[in-house]
Image (cartoon, rainbow, N blue to C red):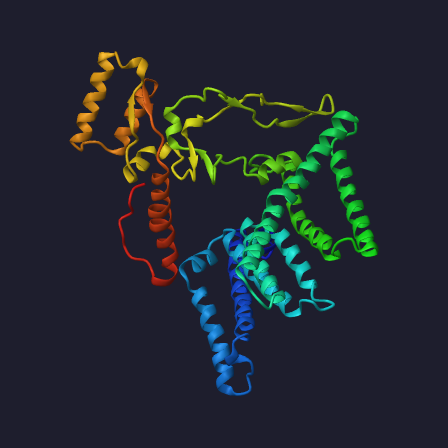
Length: 447
């Protein structure tokens, strides 16, 4: 939407790409502006800047804010995001705006009109979903601002509780409020079309009217009865108004544009789009490891259900399920799941083995009498002792003889080693320090 706005200023078709690129430039410029204002608010809290009654204090005050702002402006990540047509420049602008809004809210908190900043924050968080989800990451910081503003005596218990509440609010918005809203619209559409016999889109319209009546009467009763804080309901409303920018997605999908990936043309497909179901499934805390590719199907639960996919049947005027969703997906082997599954991709099994260590294996009891198999395994162990094997050699051996071997999963220590040494030590900190120490020519380690 913003790209289309910038492109209308092009006087020639060849200028469209440049104008859309300028969207990132302007977003980054305003990011720096709000960062400067944020630093001035923070610096005013220092005893040295309580009063700016002379030239030296004013130069020190604004000079400090300028140095901090320009240090971020010319950092590696921010600068290169500012000159490419991507979402990160605008996402950074939203982060900057949200944190500035949080500090302005802190200045006017507990005043008659102070919560107007909170409503603006809720609205911008909703808008941020149309750009990038990382706008949610300001919520814990806003929670800390609220905690320190309203608690003169800070203790560990209160600090931990404030963090937990902040993370709970983040998860409520990301995992409950918005997905359940989309699910309500999707289920209402299917119900009113398939069960009641109404035309397509009627369920979506009815669901929208339900939301209008819900917020109207909830706000009215909340103000009259004072059951809960009136601003809580308003914040949810403003967040959903901001999130309504997502309506552009099904509108454009129904227009059958040339590029229409996943075709999120209704609320149900939009929910799948929101949940990133078009990408490979990943597990953050517990899930299958790469050794699952050698293990075969799970003994007790080899399959699990997929999600039914509804499409419109114009002949019957109903939604029909067009996929075989029951027991449609192969389940991972329970013996090859683990906590913090950093080593999860079977496509990179050889590289994982190179970085950590080979998997332990033995011949399955039912095949230990097979002399040819025993000879092949002994030859492979000889090659291991001679140090002739790479991770890809191990992977090929495991994959070829997997039905006849008992192969152990990677240890939890291997996952931690990969997390701290490679993902954080080699990738994250190296990229992070690009912003402050510059880049140095290096040979990329294969992984």
